[in-house]
Length: 168
Image (cartoon, rainbow, N blue to C red; front, side, top):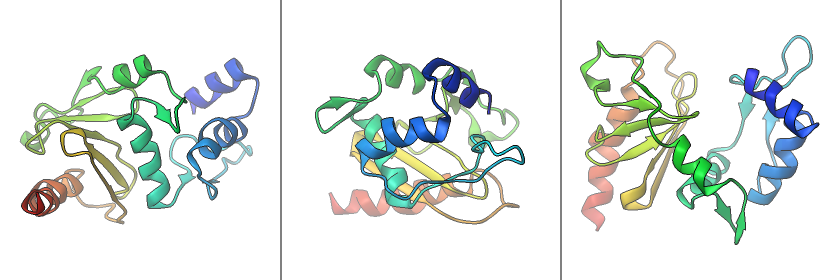
């Protein structure tokens, strides 16, 4: 929510309006829905609803170093900086999270998946993951609010990546 306030201050436009014009429209995202806070602000902490293919478009934007259709939408330097671990894992006691860090709004999985990868993590298992070395984007949508945060990562590591690698 704080980032939304900073963005509005810097751009002079409300978050939802700015995101629609500067991100969603250029990416071809037509059906973004923002849950609203009790005061009417877009819930920037976890209230953006997108279709899985639209989530993949945002991940693709980052895989393409901020470019879409020849236009630099996000600075290449920002993309690189945001995908570098700025802080270590918030789960240091969990051996499955060893080597995982957090960049700027992205989890950086190190070699957790057997090769460098990064992604997001939404409530209940809404997880986009990019595996740059394979030019692969995986978007998981699930509802496992009581399961461990590593469940989606295990699924990608143990089932999806081996299946994709067999096809190569």
